[in-house]
Image (cartoon, rainbow, N blue to C red):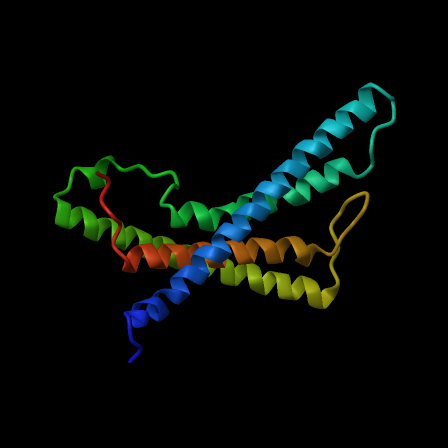
Length: 171
């Protein structure tokens, strides 16, 4: 056994890594949103001020939009900040409320995990077949699909964590 309570630090390491990866993905999602804003602003200026619309902005925005959504989703799940219709759960006693929240998080983990597996399988198929996007400037489709699979897998892990680790009560 390690001295000084370091066992707890080792036990918490997987959660800290998961949280760090979720925050990193959220940062990448925020950066992608910034690129989307820039690309649209550039497209509008190029089109209406200079009469020279871009060929790339629309495609780039489409690709990055899915990245924004799926890279930010794990951090939203970690923070328990997702949209919830909570009036049914809020009407339960504290013990049943905690149980219901854990059960819902577990079901959410299963759904996100299953979706992540399906999407990852599709990304592998797209990679094997060399499938490209249908766009002015096509890119390998698996790039986009792999980001979606990553986001769903991390979201599933965060929901699983929410099902296992009890939420702290708001003061």
